[in-house]
Amino acid sequence: MAEHGRLPRGHRVDGARGTHQVPDGAPQVTHEHFDHFSEENLRRAAEANPALRIWTNASVAGRLDGLGGRVTTVGHGEAFEAAGFAVEVHGTWHEVLHPDIPRVGNVGFLVDGTLFHPGDALTVPETPVDTLLLPVHGPWSTTGRLIDYVRDVAPRHAYAIHDGALNDTGLAMIGGLLGAADPGTGAPYDHLAVGSGVDLPSTPAQPSA
Image (cartoon, rainbow, N blue to C red; front, side, top):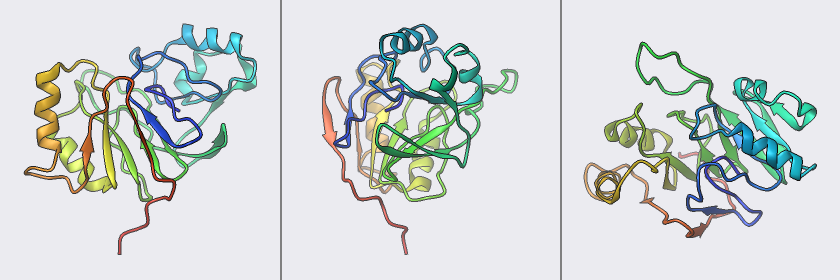
């Protein structure tokens, strides 16, 4: 689905398969940073697959000139269909790295009303989320903020993404704080090993009473 893995038609989230693997048919790119976007790989994939379509923000789209209508620029509040999935766009900006570092654009993708990939942002969609792909590590984040973020989104389940710079100790530390023990987020949390996967429910989450 998005740049961190594939979401085949059966609603399945794959564990990390390498930052720049390009999904078949309908890649969606949240933002321009090198650990999310490879212009070279996307151009190569577009050349190899004439049916490939790309959805992304204006900054990334501007670096894919020459691909014409195969690249669609999307922004917050828009919706589209990609490879049979209904996708909503949420968010506009990357989280702040440092006041001296200019922010870049970042869009999140809510797929079929069930799975949300926020990119490098702690965007809270204006609609219930069943499965949250949670960016658990980055120079712009703390685990304390992640706890509050999961509480705000209130998904049925959260799965770790953006964990490539963590060793086993770091994964265990973050997993302990985001897991069932105190302080608690209200949602089950899991980290998928490389090559593993999990079937997702196909029914969107309902608003809480």
